[in-house]
Amino acid sequence: MTEELEPTMESERLATLGSYQVMDDARRNAFDRITRLVADIFAAPVASISLIEKDRELFRSAVGLAETDADRKSSLCGGMVDSHESLVIEDASVDPRFSNNPLVSGGPAIRFYAGAPLIAPNGMVLGALWFADTVPRCSITANQLDQLKTMADIVMSELELSREIRLREQAQKNAAIDRSNLDLTLALSDIASFRTDLETGKIEWGGAYMKIWGEDAGEALTQVEDAFARIHPEDRESVTEAMSAAAAPGENMKRVSGSYCPRARFAGSRATATISKQTGGRP
Picture (tube, rainbow, N blue to C red):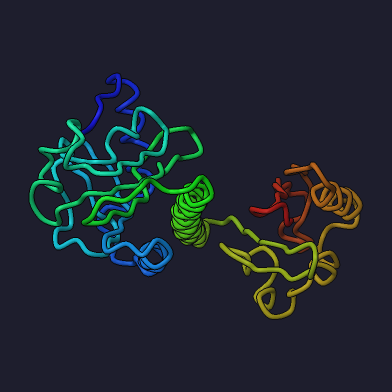
């Protein structure tokens, strides 16, 4: 049994589900532990973390189920997508809503069922954490249902953590690619770049830095104070102030101009630098 959401809401729900990219993920150890724990706590032969796709219910991690998915129309937890409420069925075989369900009339011949919805931070229900028995039961206590809801929240926390790790890894990968492309572009030009950690004072050079700062810059200028010695005296104070301002709480970046190249052939040349923080607020 499943309910149909308004099309716009269903589109948003499916987009939310897709953002977790968990449909075919082989790394399911954390979910398997939770499913086995639910089966043990409630002495149930069947348990599952189910995710509701457009046309199917995916048993993301399951105990006691031979199949890996089922038609969404026969999903016992499908109604939670709309209701946002937990569902308890004492005997599905005599409940007209579920008696003809393939999971009830066929294998695994479910009779008792209890499920708690998996609710994303934006309020969309992605599926359910549920367990079932092949014999009827006299409901469950309020405390037991609260336990099931708590474990459903843990499942969502695991999904959120997995997504955050994936997004962070992708962001780091993109940043590395951008950095590599920038270094290559600068290396083919007459532009120098450097990255400075304002906490350690360490400098990383890039681009055509040897043309401007000297062929020994990569080895000789590894600390901020070393580089400052080669900045035009008239600009040292403004650069120092700009770097200090960028390091201040609430400040993201500072742009300054000056004659950063002390060598005679570059005398009078001007340069612009942007000083910014890394992700997390570190300069």
